[in-house]
Image (cartoon, rainbow, N blue to C red; front, top):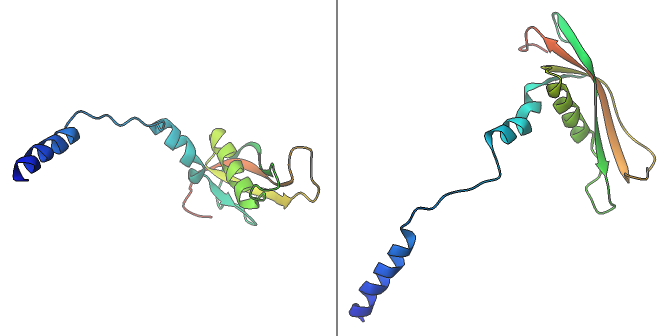
Amino acid sequence: MKKMLIPALVILLSGCAGEYKFNSNLSGEAINDYFKASDVIVYENSLPSGNFERKGLVEGESCQIAKNDPPASIVEARTIARRAAADKGANGLIIKTCFLASEQTPLCVSSAICVGQAINTVDTTTH
């Protein structure tokens, strides 16, 4: 039994030794793109204190495509609007309106939409 145990351990441990490479479909660029919305401060029911530059209108839409999909959400629509603001080089977003659409469309069972103004603020520490 001891004679069989040592060769078995050698074979088992040698199988773990080797040069293994980790390949991922995630790149640093993709991660930065995913988190860029977090760099945009949302101003809802208030304006930023101080001066700001308008970058343009942005919108975000959340769509429930099938009946068994999660329902559309204002939170997701606001995040998509934040990402659109970041794409314009903005560091702030003044939300003008967010609403859940009351009617079903040919593409969406339910939808939520947020519209806002993408801005660049001088000081991002105050809201």
